[in-house]
Picture (tube, one colour):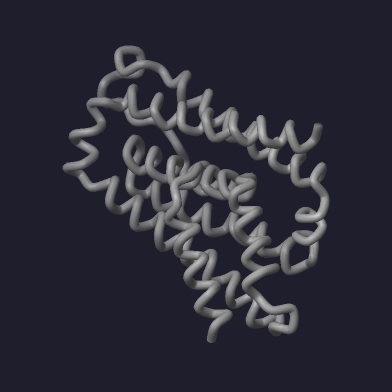
Amino acid sequence: MHELLAVVTITLIAVISPGPDFAMVSRNSLLLSRRAGLLTALGIGLGVWVHIAYTLLGVGLVIQQSLRLYAALKLIGALYLLWLGVKMLRTPTAAAAGPSAPVALSDFAALRTGFLTNALNPKSTVFVVSLFLQAVQPDTPLAQRIGYGAFVSAAHVAWFGLVALALSGEEVRARLLRFRRWLDRVFGALLVGFGALLAASALRRAA
């Protein structure tokens, strides 16, 4: 029971803390559609399974012990966030794209964006590895560990699904879409900021 409470508490705190996942779901929900936001949230939940899988296989312990390996993974994630952020910053202005022209994004693209944002997010690496190595006992059955992983994934989908629903309401979107250009640049700047901080940290670790 203590182990379960620890997993639930730590997961809820980690999920609602701001980060790249939140920025991406917010951006897609506000500027694209509710469907895009929800699929991005689902992709994030699927991305969590990447971290769960290598942690259950024992690779998480290797990552934790190898500073250079962790720095390399961190740098890859940082470069992805920088790419996403720059892409948003370079979005055409409302005058060039048309004031009501939606940004095209397929269902698969929205799902993939959420998946990669989480799967390449070093924050998720640290969270999942630390959770399973510190809060979960070594003798906990594998089936129970997988159950904890399912809860962590479901918590991500539920939280970011709520974020998508809240930000994709017609009244909210109608008001904010007038500032589409600036919103894209704000979210782009946030992702560039996250990426730059992660890249700097990774380079320091690798030095």
